[in-house]
Length: 365
Ligand code: 11C
Image (cartoon, rainbow, N blue to C red):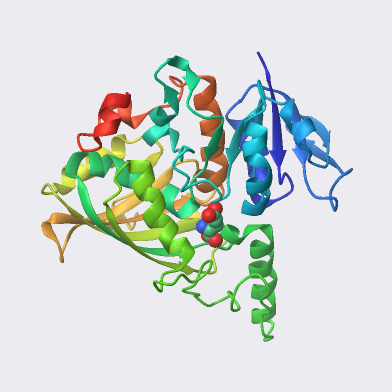
């Protein structure tokens, strides 16, 4: 029962990772179809599933597949995703862009947290939607650590400061950092086209467009998407997002206020047990989450747990690092496909420990 799988944006940073993750997770790929722009069309790409000739996308071609991953712009997704997902017996469409994340009709999914929102009440092999949105990388990495804590202590307020890698701006962003670092070290001024300012040896507190409220869209995504994934529309979330000269893992300092008092040892235990999370929290041995160690890992790292000086017993501080291209994009997308193949195969935190506070989860699982 092999599956036919298509990737749109197959030559981009996320598209390339999706191919690797499909192989590493042993997703039953019977045939892989790679779509990219006319610049790459016709090229032969070696993949773990054999050599594949890059094709130009059309809805007719993609409609014949079982799964289509969209790792392209939001405009492309807006143009084609709904049409493709509406084809009778057509593919499941997993969209990595922000186009549908806030659409109340489209599930926004991290399988281990809220995969159950995909399940139709008609039975386990029936799903509520064939178009599924993959979250923003910054949100996805943070909520892996936050969900188990929320289920135990009920998070009331979140203040997040991010340290985001160049890969969030795609292969071009990574290239600009690599080239710019060489230029900088050679005593030249690093040229910036992708980023608002030169990134090497710098920090840019600006990711995506500024909004009317003074936050950037990247920062607002953390608020909007955390609320939707947790099914907590009132959760207070404030984020400051900064780009730093790191290649592909995002880090985040997170402060929270909780409804219930926090026991730090219990918080450590919860994170040590959580699927998709590695607890790295031994300051005595200089062990804490770092982007260098989180790079190319499926699990995110969480550590630096401590009682908050601001929120006291009802507060917790922590630090997370996670691979932007994996949990933040390709891995999560492939896990969604795995969940659609067999919901029981994906570890689901909600099944082991029902969240006491998100009422809809209790009824859903
Ligand atoms: C960044 N988080 O680091 C962005 C990239 O909404 O999918 C992902 C943008 C998105 O620049």
